[in-house]
Image (cartoon, rainbow, N blue to C red; front, side, top):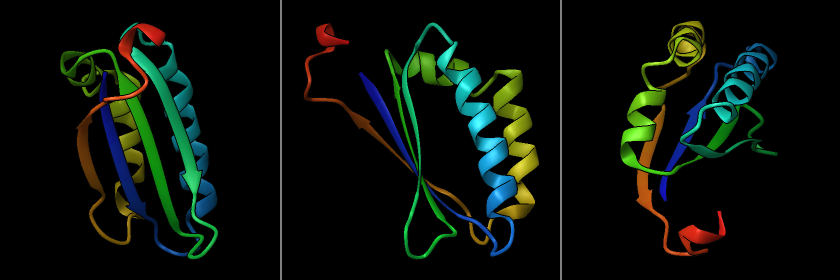
Amino acid sequence: MFVVCVTVWVKPGREKDFIEATLENARQTRREPGNVRFDVSQCIEPANQFFLYEVYRTPDDFKAHQQTEHYLRWKTTVADWMAQPRQGIKHQSLFPPDEQW
């Protein structure tokens, strides 16, 4: 599995808007055949920090996700709400084994 962990810092006061847009993107992403998981988490303190945990079957599935209408809409919508550039780190999943997904 191919895992992408994204940390996002949102401008204070834009958290609710960011959550709404991000949940819509997550719901649409879960419908993609190559997506296995998409978690959206909000930090308790500071509340304007978010963590997106995305799991795809392959790196190509992630690349396909980045071309979808819902992802491009999300990216454009939230761009001005970010307090700093988002940080995305890519990983190869070691456990659980792929066949468990």
